[in-house]
View 1 (cartoon, rainbow, N blue to C red):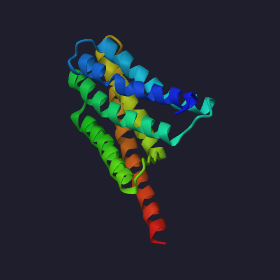
View 2 (view 1 turned 90 degrees about the horizontal axis):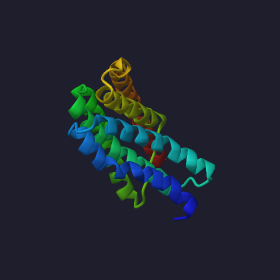
View 3 (view 1 turned 180 degrees about the horizontal axis):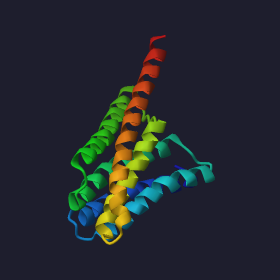
View 4 (view 1 turned 135 degrees about the vertical axis):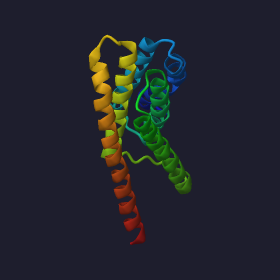
Length: 186
């Protein structure tokens, strides 16, 4: 891997490396301030790894796969850890965790079946990831800064938006599968 490709991939991999810290600080409720800043760093790294790859003109399939895997590993763990300490809506958290893990499993099975890593990131998928990060930050902010009412308000709103985006995410993957199967039959 070239240096230009390694920088955005390294930024993506940092999300995987901070997972144990999110579990330790967030899941146990030891330090929700640290959890908030770790989750904010993860959200920003998800944005800036793509910006950096485009700036360096080093977009690659490897980078897309690493970014996708980092999100699919970080988001369920962060959602479960933070909601365990803060008390998020179990139905919303459960649905989002199930979605992220299901997409990870399906993409892994499809990748194994074709013999190379494949990642299809639909617009609906992007929305689910964005609103999952916003929900995590809202929950972590509610725990870290209890005197700031904005985070409590944002938990409900971001939960609603995350579930709404989840519906679009599922629909976009169904549409993609239908298009692929239609093209395969012809």
